[in-house]
Image (cartoon, rainbow, N blue to C red; front, side, top):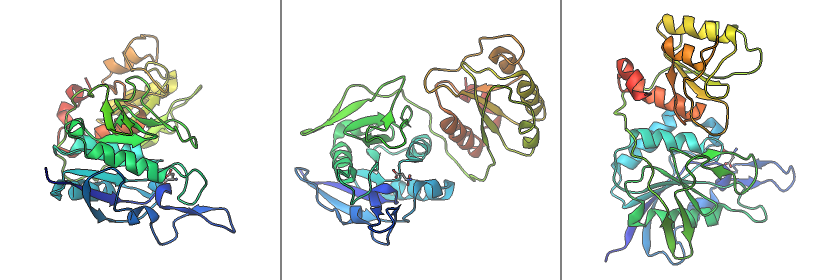
Length: 317
Ligand code: ASP
Protein backbone atom coordinates (compact mmCIF):
# COMPACT_ATOMS: atom_id res chain seq x y z
CA UNK A 1 0.00 0.00 0.00
CA UNK A 2 1.35 3.46 -0.86
CA UNK A 3 2.21 5.86 1.95
CA UNK A 4 -0.44 8.29 3.13
CA UNK A 5 0.15 11.91 2.18
CA UNK A 6 -0.60 14.37 4.99
CA UNK A 7 -0.86 18.13 4.51
CA UNK A 8 0.31 20.17 7.50
CA UNK A 9 -1.15 23.67 7.64
CA UNK A 10 0.56 25.69 10.37
CA UNK A 11 -1.20 28.88 11.44
CA UNK A 12 0.57 29.94 14.66
CA UNK A 13 -0.61 29.82 18.29
CA UNK A 14 1.27 28.65 21.36
CA UNK A 15 2.38 25.46 19.59
CA UNK A 16 4.62 27.69 17.44
CA UNK A 17 5.66 30.14 20.21
CA UNK A 18 8.57 30.37 22.61
CA UNK A 19 8.88 31.66 26.14
CA UNK A 20 11.31 34.57 26.06
CA UNK A 21 14.30 33.88 28.35
CA UNK A 22 14.53 37.43 29.73
CA UNK A 23 10.98 38.80 29.75
CA UNK A 24 9.21 35.49 30.42
CA UNK A 25 6.57 36.48 27.86
CA UNK A 26 5.31 33.86 25.41
CA UNK A 27 5.42 35.08 21.81
CA UNK A 28 6.07 34.29 18.16
CA UNK A 29 9.74 34.81 17.41
CA UNK A 30 9.90 34.64 13.64
CA UNK A 31 10.55 30.90 13.36
CA UNK A 32 8.04 28.10 13.77
CA UNK A 33 9.56 25.07 15.54
CA UNK A 34 6.53 22.87 14.77
CA UNK A 35 6.92 23.49 11.02
CA UNK A 36 10.33 21.76 11.13
CA UNK A 37 8.65 18.47 12.10
CA UNK A 38 8.28 16.48 8.90
CA UNK A 39 8.57 12.96 10.28
CA UNK A 40 6.41 11.27 12.88
CA UNK A 41 7.71 8.16 14.67
CA UNK A 42 5.86 4.93 13.76
CA UNK A 43 3.75 6.66 11.11
CA UNK A 44 4.46 5.69 7.51
CA UNK A 45 3.47 8.86 5.70
CA UNK A 46 4.83 11.67 3.56
CA UNK A 47 4.18 15.31 4.39
CA UNK A 48 3.63 18.62 2.66
CA UNK A 49 3.92 21.76 4.79
CA UNK A 50 2.05 25.02 4.25
CA UNK A 51 2.28 28.10 6.44
CA UNK A 52 -0.27 30.58 5.07
CA UNK A 53 0.17 32.88 8.10
CA UNK A 54 1.58 32.71 11.62
CA UNK A 55 -0.63 34.44 14.15
CA UNK A 56 -1.97 34.06 17.69
CA UNK A 57 -5.47 32.65 17.44
CA UNK A 58 -7.17 35.75 18.94
CA UNK A 59 -6.03 37.45 15.69
CA UNK A 60 -7.95 34.95 13.51
CA UNK A 61 -10.81 36.34 11.41
CA UNK A 62 -13.16 34.85 8.85
CA UNK A 63 -10.57 35.77 6.20
CA UNK A 64 -7.99 33.38 7.66
CA UNK A 65 -10.67 30.71 8.16
CA UNK A 66 -11.59 31.08 4.46
CA UNK A 67 -7.91 30.68 3.50
CA UNK A 68 -7.80 27.39 5.43
CA UNK A 69 -11.04 26.21 3.82
CA UNK A 70 -9.62 26.85 0.33
CA UNK A 71 -6.29 25.14 1.09
CA UNK A 72 -8.13 22.06 2.35
CA UNK A 73 -10.50 22.00 -0.63
CA UNK A 74 -7.57 22.25 -3.07
CA UNK A 75 -5.32 19.58 -1.55
CA UNK A 76 -4.74 16.18 -3.05
CA UNK A 77 -3.45 14.87 0.28
CA UNK A 78 -5.09 11.93 2.08
CA UNK A 79 -5.54 13.90 5.29
CA UNK A 80 -4.95 17.36 6.76
CA UNK A 81 -3.50 18.43 10.12
CA UNK A 82 -3.95 22.10 11.03
CA UNK A 83 -1.95 23.56 13.93
CA UNK A 84 -3.73 26.50 15.55
CA UNK A 85 -3.84 28.56 18.74
CA UNK A 86 -6.15 27.04 21.28
CA UNK A 87 -8.09 30.19 22.23
CA UNK A 88 -10.26 30.14 19.09
CA UNK A 89 -9.52 26.59 17.90
CA UNK A 90 -13.09 25.42 18.46
CA UNK A 91 -14.38 28.25 16.26
CA UNK A 92 -12.09 27.55 13.30
CA UNK A 93 -12.82 23.84 13.69
CA UNK A 94 -16.58 24.41 13.71
CA UNK A 95 -16.45 26.92 10.83
CA UNK A 96 -14.62 24.32 8.73
CA UNK A 97 -17.06 21.64 9.90
CA UNK A 98 -19.96 23.82 8.72
CA UNK A 99 -18.48 24.69 5.36
CA UNK A 100 -16.24 21.85 4.09
CA UNK A 101 -17.55 19.00 1.98
CA UNK A 102 -14.43 16.82 1.76
CA UNK A 103 -14.13 13.14 2.51
CA UNK A 104 -10.56 13.17 3.88
CA UNK A 105 -9.82 13.48 7.61
CA UNK A 106 -9.32 17.08 8.78
CA UNK A 107 -7.74 17.33 12.23
CA UNK A 108 -6.90 20.46 14.24
CA UNK A 109 -4.46 20.57 17.12
CA UNK A 110 -2.38 23.02 19.15
CA UNK A 111 -0.63 23.30 22.49
CA UNK A 112 -1.22 24.69 25.94
CA UNK A 113 2.52 25.15 26.58
CA UNK A 114 4.93 26.94 24.27
CA UNK A 115 7.60 24.97 22.43
CA UNK A 116 10.47 25.61 24.89
CA UNK A 117 8.52 25.21 28.15
CA UNK A 118 9.12 22.16 30.33
CA UNK A 119 6.52 19.53 29.48
CA UNK A 120 5.59 21.24 26.21
CA UNK A 121 2.64 19.39 24.70
CA UNK A 122 2.90 20.61 21.09
CA UNK A 123 4.87 17.71 19.65
CA UNK A 124 2.82 15.01 21.36
CA UNK A 125 -0.39 16.71 20.21
CA UNK A 126 0.98 16.88 16.66
CA UNK A 127 1.88 13.19 16.73
CA UNK A 128 -1.61 12.30 18.00
CA UNK A 129 -3.19 14.50 15.31
CA UNK A 130 -1.18 12.78 12.56
CA UNK A 131 -2.07 9.32 13.91
CA UNK A 132 -5.69 10.43 13.67
CA UNK A 133 -5.35 11.96 10.19
CA UNK A 134 -3.82 8.77 8.71
CA UNK A 135 -6.64 6.58 10.03
CA UNK A 136 -9.33 5.58 7.52
CA UNK A 137 -11.74 5.63 10.47
CA UNK A 138 -11.32 9.42 10.74
CA UNK A 139 -12.86 10.19 7.36
CA UNK A 140 -16.45 11.45 7.13
CA UNK A 141 -16.67 12.25 10.84
CA UNK A 142 -16.57 16.02 10.33
CA UNK A 143 -13.67 18.14 11.48
CA UNK A 144 -11.83 16.64 14.46
CA UNK A 145 -10.00 18.38 17.30
CA UNK A 146 -7.21 16.32 18.84
CA UNK A 147 -5.73 17.55 22.13
CA UNK A 148 -4.23 15.61 25.01
CA UNK A 149 -4.55 12.29 23.11
CA UNK A 150 -8.32 12.75 22.95
CA UNK A 151 -10.40 13.04 19.77
CA UNK A 152 -13.31 15.48 19.81
CA UNK A 153 -15.90 16.41 17.21
CA UNK A 154 -15.77 20.10 16.21
CA UNK A 155 -19.52 20.13 16.90
CA UNK A 156 -19.17 19.34 20.59
CA UNK A 157 -15.76 20.50 21.77
CA UNK A 158 -14.98 23.63 23.74
CA UNK A 159 -11.92 25.08 25.46
CA UNK A 160 -12.99 24.76 29.07
CA UNK A 161 -9.79 25.57 30.97
CA UNK A 162 -7.56 28.57 30.45
CA UNK A 163 -4.23 26.81 31.09
CA UNK A 164 -4.54 23.10 31.97
CA UNK A 165 -3.12 20.56 29.49
CA UNK A 166 -6.52 18.84 29.51
CA UNK A 167 -8.25 22.06 28.47
CA UNK A 168 -10.64 20.69 25.82
CA UNK A 169 -13.91 18.99 26.72
CA UNK A 170 -17.02 17.80 24.91
CA UNK A 171 -19.43 18.20 27.79
CA UNK A 172 -22.70 16.64 26.67
CA UNK A 173 -21.57 14.18 24.01
CA UNK A 174 -18.18 13.22 25.38
CA UNK A 175 -15.04 12.71 23.27
CA UNK A 176 -15.50 10.52 20.21
CA UNK A 177 -12.17 8.75 20.47
CA UNK A 178 -8.77 8.37 21.97
CA UNK A 179 -5.29 8.26 20.45
CA UNK A 180 -3.40 5.16 21.55
CA UNK A 181 0.23 4.18 20.92
CA UNK A 182 -1.06 2.12 18.02
CA UNK A 183 -3.23 4.84 16.50
CA UNK A 184 -6.66 6.46 16.63
CA UNK A 185 -9.42 4.51 18.34
CA UNK A 186 -13.04 5.70 18.01
CA UNK A 187 -15.87 5.19 20.50
CA UNK A 188 -18.59 6.87 18.44
CA UNK A 189 -19.44 8.84 15.32
CA UNK A 190 -20.77 12.39 15.72
CA UNK A 191 -24.29 13.19 14.53
CA UNK A 192 -24.35 14.05 10.82
CA UNK A 193 -24.43 17.81 10.42
CA UNK A 194 -25.52 20.09 7.61
CA UNK A 195 -22.90 21.95 5.58
CA UNK A 196 -23.41 25.39 4.06
CA UNK A 197 -22.35 26.46 0.60
CA UNK A 198 -21.18 29.92 1.58
CA UNK A 199 -20.65 33.07 -0.49
CA UNK A 200 -19.69 36.49 0.89
CA UNK A 201 -18.97 36.23 4.59
CA UNK A 202 -19.19 39.91 5.43
CA UNK A 203 -21.81 39.95 8.21
CA UNK A 204 -21.97 41.74 11.55
CA UNK A 205 -23.16 39.32 14.24
CA UNK A 206 -22.28 40.25 17.82
CA UNK A 207 -22.44 37.78 20.72
CA UNK A 208 -23.81 38.98 24.07
CA UNK A 209 -23.95 37.26 27.43
CA UNK A 210 -26.93 37.65 29.76
CA UNK A 211 -26.55 38.52 33.45
CA UNK A 212 -28.67 39.41 36.46
CA UNK A 213 -30.46 42.69 35.85
CA UNK A 214 -29.43 42.88 32.15
CA UNK A 215 -31.19 45.88 30.64
CA UNK A 216 -31.91 47.01 27.09
CA UNK A 217 -28.99 49.44 26.67
CA UNK A 218 -26.69 47.22 24.60
CA UNK A 219 -29.40 45.36 22.71
CA UNK A 220 -31.01 48.61 21.55
CA UNK A 221 -27.77 49.51 19.76
CA UNK A 222 -27.91 46.42 17.53
CA UNK A 223 -30.66 47.18 15.00
CA UNK A 224 -28.06 47.65 12.21
CA UNK A 225 -26.66 44.12 12.72
CA UNK A 226 -27.24 41.16 10.41
CA UNK A 227 -27.96 38.96 13.41
CA UNK A 228 -27.40 38.74 17.15
CA UNK A 229 -26.56 35.78 19.39
CA UNK A 230 -27.26 35.90 23.12
CA UNK A 231 -25.95 33.47 25.68
CA UNK A 232 -29.09 33.58 27.78
CA UNK A 233 -29.71 32.20 31.27
CA UNK A 234 -30.37 28.51 31.92
CA UNK A 235 -32.54 26.90 29.25
CA UNK A 236 -32.81 30.19 27.33
CA UNK A 237 -34.36 32.89 29.49
CA UNK A 238 -33.68 36.64 29.78
CA UNK A 239 -34.38 39.39 32.30
CA UNK A 240 -37.58 41.29 31.31
CA UNK A 241 -35.97 44.50 29.98
CA UNK A 242 -33.47 42.58 27.86
CA UNK A 243 -36.23 40.30 26.56
CA UNK A 244 -38.35 43.29 25.56
CA UNK A 245 -35.42 44.74 23.56
CA UNK A 246 -34.81 41.34 21.91
CA UNK A 247 -38.44 41.13 20.83
CA UNK A 248 -38.21 44.62 19.31
CA UNK A 249 -35.02 43.59 17.50
CA UNK A 250 -36.73 40.53 16.03
CA UNK A 251 -39.72 42.64 14.98
CA UNK A 252 -37.32 44.97 13.13
CA UNK A 253 -36.07 41.97 11.08
CA UNK A 254 -32.84 41.07 12.90
CA UNK A 255 -32.50 37.30 13.52
CA UNK A 256 -31.74 36.59 17.18
CA UNK A 257 -30.30 33.25 18.27
CA UNK A 258 -30.62 32.16 21.90
CA UNK A 259 -27.85 29.95 23.31
CA UNK A 260 -27.16 29.28 27.00
CA UNK A 261 -24.44 30.66 29.22
CA UNK A 262 -24.42 27.25 30.98
CA UNK A 263 -21.40 25.14 29.94
CA UNK A 264 -23.61 22.20 28.99
CA UNK A 265 -27.21 21.39 28.19
CA UNK A 266 -29.61 22.27 25.41
CA UNK A 267 -31.73 25.43 25.22
CA UNK A 268 -35.48 24.86 25.07
CA UNK A 269 -38.52 27.16 25.10
CA UNK A 270 -39.88 26.06 28.47
CA UNK A 271 -40.82 29.09 30.58
CA UNK A 272 -43.72 31.36 29.78
CA UNK A 273 -43.07 34.07 32.41
CA UNK A 274 -41.95 37.47 31.06
CA UNK A 275 -38.56 36.94 29.39
CA UNK A 276 -38.88 33.14 29.56
CA UNK A 277 -37.66 31.14 26.59
CA UNK A 278 -41.18 30.27 25.47
CA UNK A 279 -42.09 33.94 25.06
CA UNK A 280 -38.86 34.56 23.13
CA UNK A 281 -39.59 31.62 20.83
CA UNK A 282 -43.14 32.84 20.26
CA UNK A 283 -41.70 36.22 19.27
CA UNK A 284 -39.51 34.51 16.65
CA UNK A 285 -36.22 33.92 18.47
CA UNK A 286 -34.14 31.03 17.13
CA UNK A 287 -32.82 28.40 19.55
CA UNK A 288 -29.24 27.15 19.29
CA UNK A 289 -29.78 23.59 20.60
CA UNK A 290 -26.61 22.46 22.34
CA UNK A 291 -24.30 24.95 20.59
CA UNK A 292 -22.46 27.46 22.75
CA UNK A 293 -22.67 31.13 21.83
CA UNK A 294 -19.54 31.27 19.69
CA UNK A 295 -20.60 28.25 17.64
CA UNK A 296 -24.22 29.42 17.33
CA UNK A 297 -22.77 32.66 15.94
CA UNK A 298 -20.82 30.75 13.27
CA UNK A 299 -23.88 28.71 12.34
CA UNK A 300 -25.89 31.92 11.89
CA UNK A 301 -23.02 33.48 9.92
CA UNK A 302 -22.66 30.55 7.52
CA UNK A 303 -26.44 30.15 7.11
CA UNK A 304 -26.76 33.85 6.19
CA UNK A 305 -23.71 33.61 3.96
CA UNK A 306 -25.36 30.78 2.04
CA UNK A 307 -28.38 33.03 1.36
CA UNK A 308 -30.75 31.04 3.58
CA UNK A 309 -32.15 33.75 5.86
CA UNK A 310 -35.73 32.62 5.16
CA UNK A 311 -34.86 29.07 6.24
CA UNK A 312 -33.35 30.03 9.62
CA UNK A 313 -36.30 28.64 11.62
CA UNK A 314 -35.66 25.19 10.04
CA UNK A 315 -31.88 25.46 10.33
CA UNK A 316 -32.20 26.27 14.05
CA UNK A 317 -35.15 23.91 14.65
N1 ASP B 1 -3.24 32.54 23.12
C1 ASP B 1 -2.83 31.37 22.40
C2 ASP B 1 -3.51 31.35 21.05
O1 ASP B 1 -4.65 30.97 20.99
C3 ASP B 1 -3.19 30.17 23.19
C4 ASP B 1 -2.76 28.87 22.57
O2 ASP B 1 -2.40 28.74 21.43
O3 ASP B 1 -2.82 27.89 23.32
O4 ASP B 1 -2.90 31.66 20.07
